[in-house]
Amino acid sequence: MLGIVLFYFFLDAFGDFLEKRFVSKELEVTHFLQNAGRELIDTDIEILELEVKLFLYRVIHLNMQAFHLKSDEILEQHFQGFNKNSLFDQANHFAEQYPLIKRAAGAMIIFDAKFSDQEIKQETRIKLNQLISSVRNAMHAAKGIKDIMENKLSLSNSINEVKFDNYLQFQKRQELFYKELNLVFLHKAKIGIYEALQNLLNLADTLYREEIQDAYSNASTTLQEMDIATLFNMNRELYSSNRAMVLALKDFLLEHHQAEHFESMN
Image (cartoon, rainbow, N blue to C red):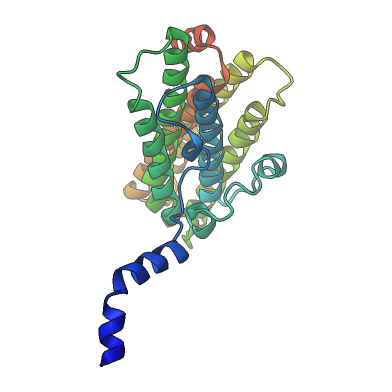
């Protein structure tokens, strides 16, 4: 009893010691933003740019994973280690990674909002707007894939040969699109970025029209009305997702005047 009474007076100090000794480090959905300050300086813009670049990679990786596509080796090597000891390191499936993508997008938008009332140079504000626009477009691209996951599973898991073949066609077209997109993202396209992005947008249009033609051809097969509707829905959402991904790269890779011209022409 005497020991308990004596120890009682040291409980607060002992509690403080334990809290400092066993700190639980909260895992983050962002990698660079933690290093930014409260006042916006040029270094913070560079930090946000690095975070957006990592975010674009994560969306590309997520969207390819949804269709069981092998990731680009060069792209994976370039970002190797960024997911280590993070929440993304613990997320193995689309359903686990997508909420983290949303949180990361939200963190960057909140970061930008902190400086909405701060007096900053016009060129800095323009750069911030482009980076956040890139995040929003990439988020739209990820959401497009999320919205068709149930449709995709119904095709990929089907024992109906025609339905499964349609899934393989979607998979093949997405593989072609992201192969070209990764070349642009890695600056490995053989032409200028503006032209490469325009070609990528044209490719998305072409794949969209090809799938429409295939869907009409399948209308005369054994597919049911619901299956045909599924094909059209998936095609529309994939086109919207692919187009949003091109616009995300446009905002990230092009200068402001080029990005504006690209937007007006498309």
